Image (cartoon, rainbow, N blue to C red; front, side):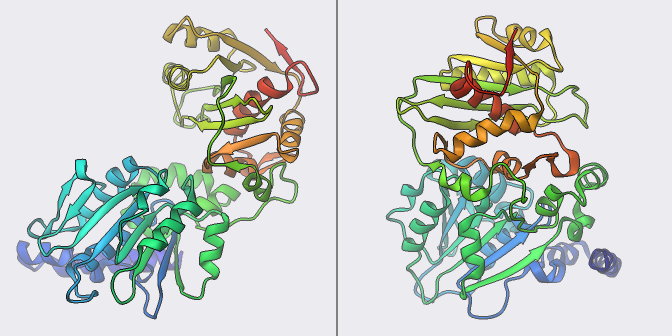
Length: 436
């Protein structure tokens, strides 16, 4: 809290000081990143190769990454004969463009008009007048990094990358220009093996920031609702305080087990289901609508292929999302829990598309008892995650006998359990499910 107060006080003092200056001077000073940045948002001193910027949601990680790239592109931190060639890598191409490049704290926003680079989306390229170039890449396609070479790289939300290790390895082979290539990683931390290794690496520098430290730049409504709701919970410690949390002692799905079950691809699937765990209400404080897609392979293994969960969706919105997932993936059936919604669940899906077959199921046992046999499938190697599903896997690792820490709803886990029960356990051992 003392850090938060210091930052707010610093900002107020600077703003008061600037009131006496001409608008042009004020505009120039407003873009002086060193003047406004917190210490954790500035590149650390020392001989590092990787700078890990670990921060909570809204802690200013993106701004720190964008300003670092700007300083690299416009500064003198490279060999005089080599203009910077920078890799920008995000979870998806859409994330790179909407957050890292065009976002409110992205690359284009941190440049003044006269120095702003040219962004060519079709070429996935950003160019500066001085010859510096940045290329954008998706962590979903590690092979796209095979061939290009760079002096610097900015990697955003590394802990959410689907193929983190493969993408990181390809990037390291490409960082071969200049005297000392550098890379910055901006991410909300999760206990994935790659991030742990980077934190322990002697060539890494680490800075941390909590959401509260950037409170002066966040909407009051966000602080009053989201931050207040999750502060002190296990999820809040990770997403707001940037802590790396290990497994709960009673977790049904230790992270090591999840990692062991991860695959890059899946075989042709014989059956595909979309499972939905609808929220009870559709207010601003309602639970998310869990939507998980899974399929059955010819090897008898279930493959989790998509987490399409929606936050705070109306019944019509989640029904459309379910129908969209059903058609996009070519599913055979929708499985919907109706403990809370009754016939309304099937009615909403029928309103969107009456031709979608829906199996309505009602739980007659507690969540832990329903989830236990599904967790056993993971232990037997009979379930695989194709890629990474950070939010779903966070819930899985945090799911204990009393549910999730903080008493939040395990919406994603519930949908996962219904999907895998339909594919692997229906007609056999518990969970006991009554078909309506």
